[in-house]
Length: 388
Image 1 (tube, rainbow, N blue to C red):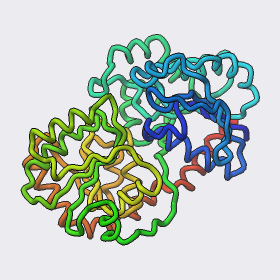
Image 2 (tube, rainbow, N blue to C red; image 1 turned 45 degrees about the vertical axis):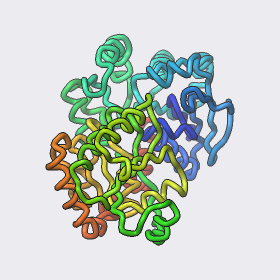
Image 3 (cartoon, rainbow, N blue to C red; image 1 turned 90 degrees about the vertical axis):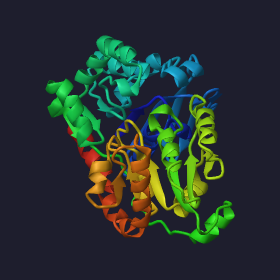
Image 4 (cartoon, rainbow, N blue to C red; image 1 turned 135 degrees about the horizontal axis):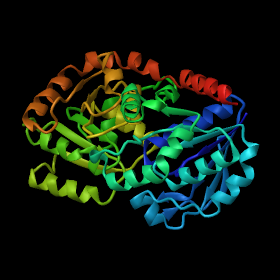
């Protein structure tokens, strides 16, 4: 089949988080199954950077990028204004067997869905964020206006709606009961590859850590909603100086500066490391040399980093707002930080998790099995054939 994915950002723009990784892995696997995959996206890389290659091929995926009118608007306000996309998509839409739209609150989706409905072409809507405006996610009034003008049209016009968790399906069904039958749960997937763990002591020596350090890893975008400030406050209640917090990820809207100021005020400078963004082998090494993975987001639709951590047998410490936590913790591969705003209580829970980490690590692979990429791709392939 000829499949096109429409997404505002794509590889190598990894700084935009999980949706890029999900779409990339999905596209790559579909190519391996013999499908012809085209990704229509923008030139967004990170403000102020752009990706200069208009057309290229990565792992068999044909990528066509449209220039954003303003990269600053795209990055700061989610206003992707792809020049020439409407004309191109309208001209070529009939050449695709499947149209697969990613994300939701974007002008790219307004254009794509409008063209599909006008041309009477079915499309699948893959949600990586909730279409229901929530105060915790910000921009509530802008999202309500978006839904009033176009959002409902995009949702009701889709032939199928894909969400990553049962919790997300419940939220949408409560707000849009008529859509419940359209919604399918398709978890984000991860390659079923065995990770050969290098020697942890040697890794730590390589990156300037000690063998006896108790390394807690926070790997995510440095943004407000990830609530890394909670982790810093929790660490201020842990007296053991061997506990170290490793903060890894791209800086967003100068969040790192605020976190560094908080770190200084709590006198944690010697126990906190700001690593910055990373990918590839260095990222794998960071997982491998850590003892626990910590994510205390106020909202998290899924979290690919949780799966990556489990690949490296790294137990999880998560807030209850991490959407995938319930599915994972059935396998006892981690613990809830029950009240992240209570630093003293959370510190005790984190220490207890560290003491139980070896037992929890043994359950990581079992938890991962439900997200095997081969199973997920087969499920999406079946959905495609239903809508062909």
